[in-house]
View 1 (spheres, rainbow, N blue to C red):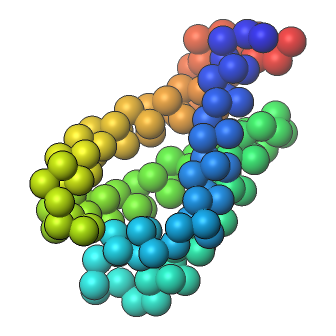
View 2: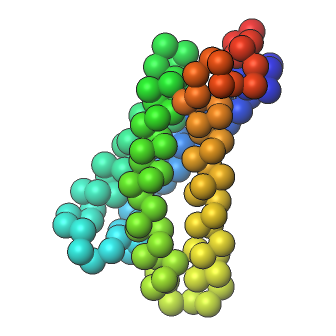
Amino acid sequence: MKLQALSCWSIGILFIVAGANHFVSPDSYQAMMPPFLPWPMALVSISGAAEILGGAGVLVPQVRRFSGWGLIALLVAVFPANIFAAMHGINGGALERVILIARLPFQVVLIAWVYRSCAASDRQRVSRDFWP
């Protein structure tokens, strides 16, 4: 399997699993929601479904770019909730806050990874041989 295909499959699986976790452990995601956002449980479900659909979409060559851009938009949209969680914590533990703060730069890395692997045009990709 080529590196580009492996990267896209990794992204797809990561987002499918992360999205499913919104339905398995919704309370931890609800705790990350800033209080000014309405309907936190609905937003948790919507973001989880969007992660699952986007993750599945990057596995399908015909919709890969569209799905990649959708995942990037989702990552940007949830970033304020991640900042809120990092600033206020979820359960109040010091180690938890350190982890939440440390994951903020990872979000930028994740956006770059999705862009490079799935959202960039063929000319912008490292390799044109995306699928064997």
